[in-house]
Image 1 (cartoon, rainbow, N blue to C red):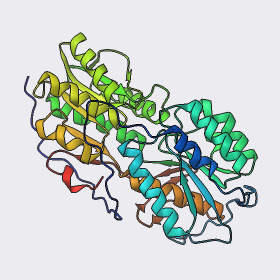
Image 2 (tube, rainbow, N blue to C red; image 1 turned 30 degrees about the vertical axis):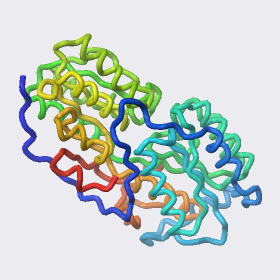
Image 3 (cartoon, rainbow, N blue to C red; image 1 turned 180 degrees about the horizontal axis):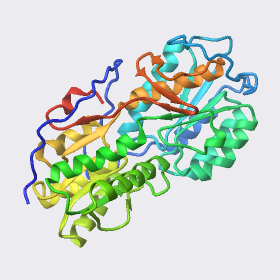
Image 4 (cartoon, rainbow, N blue to C red; image 1 turned 180 degrees about the vertical axis):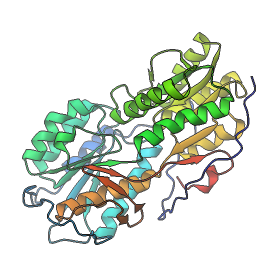
Length: 376
């Protein structure tokens, strides 16, 4: 059945601060991997003389509403931002934002992470950072449970702990830097899928990044709960399929799904490589008019697939802003200032704060009509 055309999409304007896209053209294989030794060198190069931070001394003491309060303090802070992995466009863009915040506020920001979505390697790197005595670690866990013990040791050593992009164990973090409202984002996936297919009685599949990725599981779980009431006639053909944050693996899994389920009408992709891999499979099979693909991916990487209809709509946020906000939040906490609901963060915008949870804002959506308007 030929899909209904998307008539209009709400565009959330994104104010960029000079991010140069680190886009990666769609390809038949996963993104090139960085040299693991180089990543280790990044960690080992942390200055041994960095002053150790005492979290108790840096406790939140100010609930004032002084907008844009992050300024250079008396301490030479070293803030580590650790993604799930390095070398893919999403986390490349996050790095740009994190490093820009470090430059703007005069702090030392290290952006280091594994070359694969590997929790064990994240644990090893955090252990090294504890020995180096950095002041703050903001991590996007590949497996939140696996990182809890080492993050607790880091906190006990006087290191401020935050999570970003993906939640860690709430008991070990000071702030959890979140991209969007989880419920809103989860529902958006299903609403757009049903809108594009044109009816709500069909088979669909889910390709995710990693089965232990907390943020992806939250969005999928909330979306399925929502769909059970809003779209009860939908049929999920199989359990969520892992792609290990690899576009190539997502492509291979999508081909398997298309073969095993000839009545499949839609694929939802969670994690930025997943919808691109699914689109590659749809493109190869020539099923652009039969299969809807919706997922979280970067606009520039989406363009080749949006052009021929193998990807229908992308939804995400500006990852550079997320990196920037993460560093800003770490500075505020280290300086003893509390983030607050409605705060206007430079180069980010107005944030929502509820206890530990710091939410950046609503997602953006793009089709071929507006994808080129974004710089990442």
